[in-house]
Image (cartoon, rainbow, N blue to C red; front, side):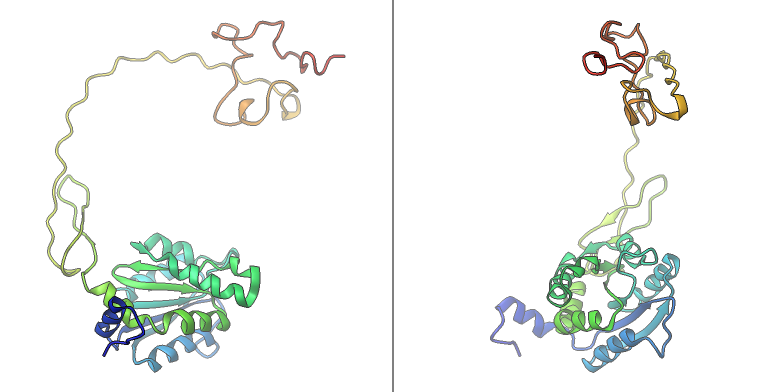
Length: 279
């Protein structure tokens, strides 16, 4: 039965959405245990209370390899994976870069909504949260901060009413999959498959035509780097990259044979800028 208060399209999608979705919960923490993981326990209870199946609840360290391994395993089995912890800016917060490296379809609206709601609770400190969501291997993954208050905000105001609808949207047309690379060719991405496991064809890139031989180029002699007393550039020779400390070297005042080199009367010599350093 559709809700008459919703737009017709959204109402029909809600009506077609499954009422029981396979989900998983991951807590990223170096210190929490199954007994002290309040945030993870809250999400498990919330999912089960809404009628969804929780196939796993894991606690992993703040370690990129461990986080990635858990997500690779769980996104094969679950349609929605909720991750709590490691979304801040401290040195140990590595959840977000790991998840972002795995995303095939980002859903920036999750982070935007979460920070908007958090702003009403914690003010400007909401900007420290890098909550992120999107699709990974055909499963929806949502990362939120580790505090119980943050998890409650995300669950009650965003996720609770959208799990079934989300599962419906993710699965109703299938997702693009990466096919095996053809011999001598690169892996191809195929779109429009009816199911993620449908067999897909690959194509080999045409052979590249041989390029004509290039005429050898005689390299120009490289001007020596200026000698700086005490490791510092002389006044008037430029600093940083322009002084040869970076990738580029300033040569217009060092190579008198180079076209466009200023004459000695106007050169910057001995640390003097004509008209500025002289009385």
